[in-house]
Amino acid sequence: MSTSLAPSSPRAESSSKLPRAALAAAAAMLVFAGSWALLHRGFYRHDQIVDTPVYQHYGELMADGKVPYRDFAVEYPPGALVPFVLPSLGARQRSAEDYRRRFEFLMVLCGCAAIAGMALVLVGLGAGPVALAGTLAFTALAPLALGPVIQTRFDLLPAALMVGALAAIVHERPKLGLGLLGAGTAVKVFPAVILPLALAYVWRRRGAREAVLAAAVFAVVVGAALLPFVLVAPHGVFHTFDSQLRRPLQIESLGAASLAAAHHVGGVAVQMHASFGSENLTGHAAQALARAQAGVQAAAVLAIWIWFALRPRAPRELVAASAGAVCAFIAFGKVLSPQFLVWLIPLVPLVRGRRGVAASAILAAALVLTQLWFPQHYWDYAARFDPRETWLVLARDVVLVALAIVLVAGSRRMDGAAPGRGSATGQEP
Image 1 (tube, rainbow, N blue to C red):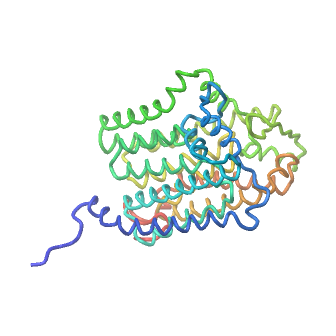
Image 2 (cartoon, helix red, strand yellow; image 1 turned 30 degrees about the horizontal axis):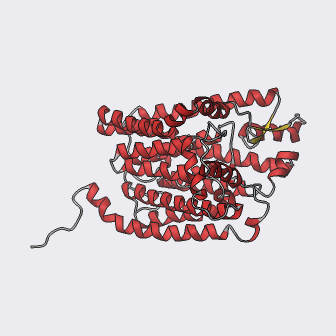
Image 3 (cartoon, one colour; image 1 turned 120 degrees about the horizontal axis):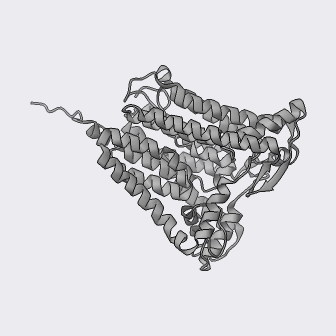
């Protein structure tokens, strides 16, 4: 008598797909490493704008025993100190080239971790081999579309932690997921944008007690990163977060790009002023737009939270809502640096059905539009508001708004597959 070999439960079915997912992830990691290597060739090397000297300064101070926030000011959350100091530890020489090489190796590992997290999410969503390969390939090649900015910023670390959190939640490990989300938030605040979505999802599926426990894990992880510095240097920590909240309208944001475009079309006066570690617009119009954008950003993200919490949601809806919330947070923020797009690279391709195809295509367009002016022509825009660069920045920002709309408003009409089926790139399993 024969015995059926079919999996007897969704968890068993997911387990049976893990070897295939592991192979696909390993192949994608190799492609990602190849993409990273190509960023050191040809036109990618020209006129780079890098943040690694700032990170190196922080890292060397910490390696010499200085205490962040107390002995020197830091503009980032405490979790970001880890990727800053690691390349400085055990270094035989403290050259900028050596630090950057070590830092880039750390970011390659973070990119590979993000790919592994994506593979786990896709397994949990029931993606087939074509969807798995296509989705991971998109992320592995994305650095070539965005350019070298991905190499000299630490955003791959919180992005990897965020995707790892989604993977754990999709696989019914909410406390692990919220712990990873807390770690990502301690590194860079944006992963907290999906916290209400994750808690609502856990509450609906596993009950209030499990959601409260998961929230407690999140709070403990964030508190463990923050509390030691609050005790040692409360004013320094407060200054860091207060300065981020008080930042003016950064020139790459939607409002600033709109003002720059109005300057070319209607002669509206615009003026750049460097402050808070970025180039920003000054004047009454810029201040009003900064306040308006902050309000729109808060309203858009809050609307996504409320919409998601109104009824039970499937895992695929959690992924789409998370991508939508993060994209809205980026698109409508008063600060929009090129590295913010790194947050979307391992997240948006996970969205399934026809909506996933559209979203991935729009994200690819946003990445390419960014590289067309950053870094090689950044100062043409920042210092002179060159017309070509102005329209490219505005186009990129409008594309990000369109991406947010597709992610949160396309819903059932654009989802070609039934819940639990389909793929992140629109292919059937």
